[in-house]
Image (cartoon, rainbow, N blue to C red; front, top):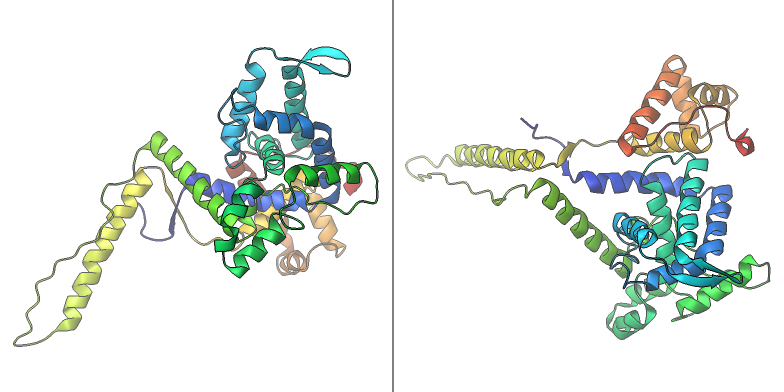
Length: 353
């Protein structure tokens, strides 16, 4: 029987939140950022062509749904040979798509993201960059109807200099990578905007993504319940004594029982109950240190003993130095297991020694 505590959570939505927390650390790592953008520059035209090839797979440019986009990429690679001219040689586009997929996986493996979902997230970030989620032409149709704040948010987060076409932004990006003194164009993001901004575009992304995850979960596990309504009937006699407190207590007792039954039905249908986890951001950061920077529990202890590290870690180490190594190891192992990530073995990355 499920406890009537905590919050009912869709497992897929929790996974997305954990992945966003982790990938934000990668996005802020300049060396990873360089390699990720180098991959974009190398394959941008290919990804752009892939985003236009809807006749090959309806989900080939579905950047909001990274799982569908990744499946569509696999489907395109396995589809019939499409000859194109590349470098004066007659080759199949599938060869380049396969090389692109291999490079995505290799980038993730190199940085400790040894899991099934990370390449799909990187792929979705590149798709999002070349498709722009919501074309400027579509936003222009409703722009005048939006509030002043919404208009400012769109101009600041989605487009530079008003309705600059996506192709112009990409051309300026290409010139920038080649070393000219062009103004830095709008850069792509590894973490979807729905996790970092509150604007019309990302609000729409959140709603569509939640609907997708909910329907996918229902198809796999069934609907949680057909009746989520709490109704309580209580006989009330105002005379001779108006004992309203007993009525309140009875209503609250019956309502709690109905609530608990509804929550148990949801849990039986695959949802989970989660209490507050104030240490979750810290645990995800530690996992990033361990898989990307190869900071083993022993090396983490050595760094803290030297006084190197975030103030909150140094404070925690000072308060419980004897048990800190176990805490670090346990927290990162549990986070890695929940996210399906294989922990690394061996020496730390050369650039992080």
